[in-house]
Image 1 (spheres, one colour):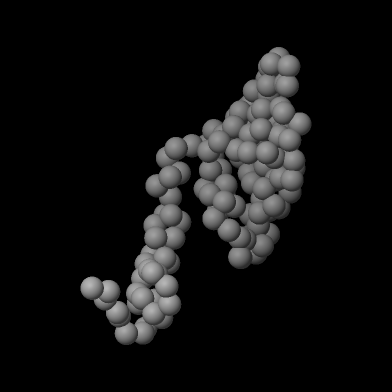
Image 2: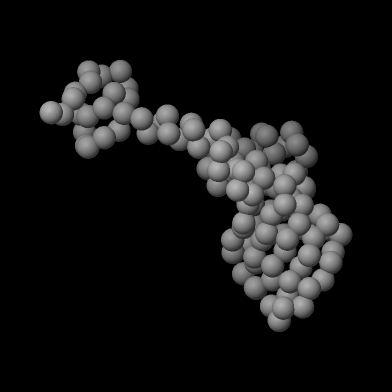
Length: 122
């Protein structure tokens, strides 16, 4: 498992989904694996390859039987989807996305992104 400093060194160039996963650390998440098991618990650590460590969780088997576990480590490539807390929709990275796309409009020449002259379509 990465230490905090090792993860920071590798986090350069990661996409929005991975950044959002890191923001979810410390919150309750639900994870479904490709084999159909569901895990719901406290996301204690995550890596850039989406490996996750979840504590104090309930595992629901494919047949519906539940098991309470203290800790589980899930490989990122085996995760089908994750449900993250709704509060993360206000994460600062989404505001940055809005700023990055500002000035892009209806094709080449419209908008002001790289210091060019602004064209206003009438």
